Image 1 (cartoon, rainbow, N blue to C red):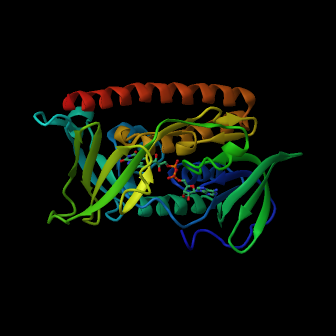
Image 2: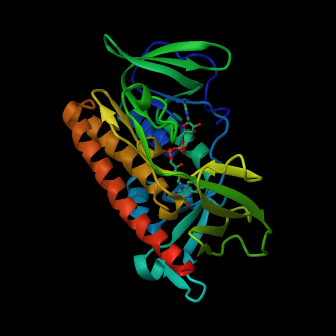
Image 3: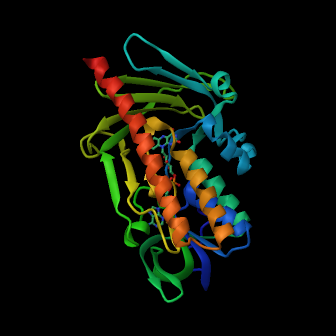
Length: 333
Ligand SMILES: Cc1cc2nc3c(=O)[nH]c(=O)nc-3n(C[C@H](O)[C@H](O)[C@H](O)COP(=O)(O)OP(=O)(O)OC[C@H]3O[C@@H](n4cnc5c(N)ncnc54)[C@H](O)[C@@H]3O)c2cc1C
């Protein structure tokens, strides 16, 4: 990312400003730049998400559509994930074998490397990478005026369309009228575990354990690093030792409006138990780029259809999440 993002201010006005260079933002920037639009991709370039995550086989069509197969076959980016072994009760082991049940393996993705590669694809497609943090945005006479803090200066930009892909902060959408609603506060804490001696080409399993209403998992990454995460209720980021992050499920009440749209975690963030975040980041970037290509903009009608879909997805996911936590609690009883 260091080399991909410019610290100096890019000149002029853009068709599209993409705020946030995670999987959602980098993918939307790549698709829109590839279709001939002038795109600026704004990201602070530090404090990137740096953890191992599962890209489940349910994302296979999106992976194919975005032609990410080659990227995911790079040994530094991902390794194959054979499936999930869940021990929801102390007695019973559930095994979800991806190849047998879905016809295809999943991936364990090293997010820091994956995100950098996606940003490189966006820049190769013609997007301009800008290192900075959006600090303000508002609608102007011809679209949107954005203020970006580059660390050295506050830079003003203008764009006809704004895509908020800033993740949980929803930095643009909240300034444009979106309100973030949390279903439940959750904290995830990481423990680095020992490195087992397993050949790097072997597919690995995600091991999930649940007890007392909380749960934890461990997984082995492409470089042989093994991470364990435990997810607890409440905001425990100050109490727990080590690396802890917000893992709450959340949704924006208004994820799009005239000329702007929020995608990925900015629109809809899942409890990690769903393993759905990467799929949604990539698929919402495709939906957003497709809508802009067919309608020419984020029209009021696109915004209202998209908002209804985001809310329906959130409600569906929350029902599934509720069932899982009920099962975890009943195990204790
Ligand atoms: C502990 C944990 C484990 C998870 N495990 C999985 C998993 O196994 N599988 C899965 O599919 N999902 C998982 N997720 C969810 C997944 O991490 C997210 O869904 C995914 O990161 C969303 O991508 P995104 O591009 O929308 O946002 P992000 O990856 O959060 O990217 C947002 C980008 O915007 C930038 N940004 C923020 N504010 C600003 C600003 N003001 N101006 C400019 N840029 C800004 C950030 O620096 C960042 O680079 C997990 C989440 C957690 C918390």
